[in-house]
Amino acid sequence: MTDASPMNPIPVGLDDGYAYTKVALPDGRLIVIPSRGRTGRAGVTWIHQGQPRIFEYETEDAQYSVGTVDGAPTHFEGYPWSGLNRVITQHALQEAGLAGRSVHAVSGLPVSAFYRKSGDRRQETITKKQESLKQSVRPISDLLPAGIAFHEVIPEALAAWYDHVIVEQGDGVTLDADRVSVPVAIVDIGGRTTDYVVVKDQGILHASSGSIQCGTLDVKQQVANGIQEQFDLETLSEQLVAQAVEKKVIRLQGKDHDVAALVKSAKREVVERIHAETRRQLGLGVELDRVLFVGGGSVALAEHIANWFPHQAIAQHPAFANARGMLKYLRYVCESSDAA
Image (cartoon, rainbow, N blue to C red; front, side):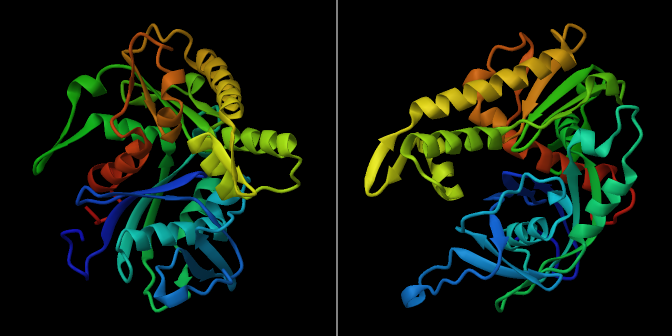
């Protein structure tokens, strides 16, 4: 557990993405679960006290199952403030050992969902996200819920910039003057979106910042389409597709089938779309000191994005860069919470 007493709120960075939900905790732990859930009860009884792998929750009088279920799609417009998002987030907090605890959280929105191109905030959208996660979610079990008492929302790729410039060493924290003083681009390849943020002199350059709806979930969708066409299948479970993308093999009717070519083709198409948008947003990056790649897609597509810029780098544990930055923002920057 963390070093806070049971009465004190726990600060968390909460990257509730479309593909995975990540939690960063002040004791250094990093938790990740697939953003996988659906409406309705699980309808599963665990034999001989087998370890449950599906968990049930209730919010706004609707019931949901989370875990090893055939997950409903998360890539829809209202997901960040949906009941599905709330129960998956609650499950991530449960997995982090925060049952019965009060939580102060910072989460994110894609850059284009947070800002208009003019730089004005989309305040209505931000408020919907803020208020949604503070709504109650009840585990349908004897577990106590984790309650989000305070919730701030920041742009997702900007969270990775905070992670980049705020350096924690031992018991101290410093703002890295060298990193703050130079222009940096963050490229955040996520599940549904790829985000771009360029920060110079601690200001966001909106002409070179924004989002496209393209990410690792597009790889899964294209692989699913290819498998259905190749094997003449009407439906295919989301879990089976996820395993096919990861292992490049799909097991159907007791036999393994090689789908490496499908996965390779899907990744190539997604990479080409992201590369074209990266060039449009950043050009050759000649005025940038560094181009920093973050997000789970930077891991999944690492070999394909390796040589886009001579001065690029992939962040350490890039899938957690946003969650770490959200926690750092909450603890060291945010003035509205006493959760530090």
